[in-house]
Amino acid sequence: MTICRNCGCSASQAAADALVLGFQEEFQAGVYSCCQVVAWADEQWLAWTEAAAEDGRSEEEATRPLEIMDCPGLVPIRFHVYPDTK
Ligand SMILES: [Zn+2]
Image (cartoon, rainbow, N blue to C red):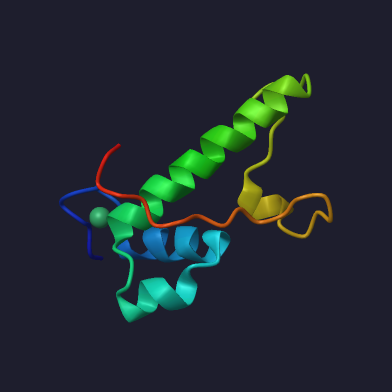
């Protein structure tokens, strides 16, 4: 198993995150690195848990976006390419 030395994720983890973000093709084509994909997935997860908290749900009750992708109320977030500032 390949582990990225920069972000610490495995190739399969990054591929799964890319799939959730709708970046699978770009990831496989090498347009986005695993580090970018994983950072974006973390950001989306954070935004999602914050939204869940605002709805009065605890993080424990929140479901990962991966598992609720077929929820009609959830529109997949489209990310733009960030500059190197974080
Ligand atoms: Zn990486």
